[in-house]
Length: 337
Image (cartoon, rainbow, N blue to C red):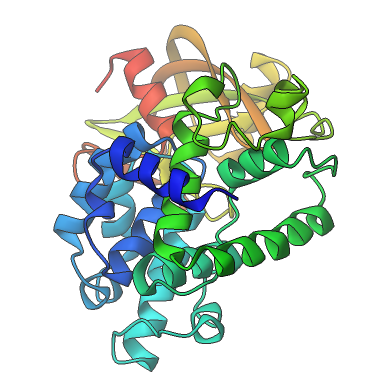
C-alpha cells in the first residue's frame, strides 16, 4: 500500500465536512450512524440539526425518542436512530456520559457494531482498528483483485482482518480510515471510477488488468417483497385519523390508515370491520416507496369517517411530530396538508 501517496492525496482533495474537523468520539459516532445507507450531501443538513439539538451524549440520552425522530424525519432507516438513542442512554447511565477508549468497551454499547467501533477508534483516537465499509471494500477488492463474494459475511470478515493489517502498517490510523473512505466515495466509485486520479493506480491490479468494473464481486440480491396497500386519509370533524405504528418498521411514527388488499372493495370491507364508517371523496396518484427489503405500492384515497375506532388517534396537524418518508410522500402527493 502506498500510504504516503494516499495520505497526500487525501489532504489535498478531501471534502470540507464538519465531522472531519473534530476528534470528539460522540460527534464521530453520530456522523457514522447518519452515513449508514445515506449519501453525505443528504445527511449533512440532518447532521447539523441533530448536533445543534443534541450536542452531547447527555442531551441525547435525556431526550425522548419522539424528539429524536422529529429531528431526523425524512432521512429514512429510522431503526439506526432508535439504537443511537439507546446507546446514548447506556453511555449516560453506565459510563458517566463518556465514550470509552477501548474497542471492546465500545462494542458493549447498544447499536455500536464492529464497523462503528473501528471508525471511532481510528478517527477519534488514532488507534489501529479497521472500519471496513462499502467504500473500503470496493477499493481493496479492486486494488488487490479479490474475488470473494462480499455479500457473504465470512468474506467481509476476512477482508476486515486484511484491512486491520493494512491500518496497522500505515502508522496513521486516522488518515488511513478517512482517506480510504474518501477514495471510495469520490474516486473509486461504483460506476465511472476516475482511475487516473487515484493515488493507488500504480499498484491497482484491476486497473492493470482492465477489470475494474468486475469488482467488488457481489452475488445478486434477493428480490424485494412487494405489498399493495390502500391508504385512506380520513378526517373526523376537523382532525385527521392516524395510527401510531407498533411494528418494527417505522416504529413510533404516526401513519394514515393502511389496508393491505388486492381491491378497493376488499379494503373498504376491512375498514368497516375495523369500526370505520367512511365516505370516500377522492382518489390520488399511486405512490411507491422502496425499503431495503420491501416495496410498498399505495393507492391513495381521501374521505371522512363518522367513527374513530379506539385504537386510532385524531390530530389537527403534523407540524410537531416525526414524519416518516412515506408519510411525507403521501402528504405531498395529496396536497391536503
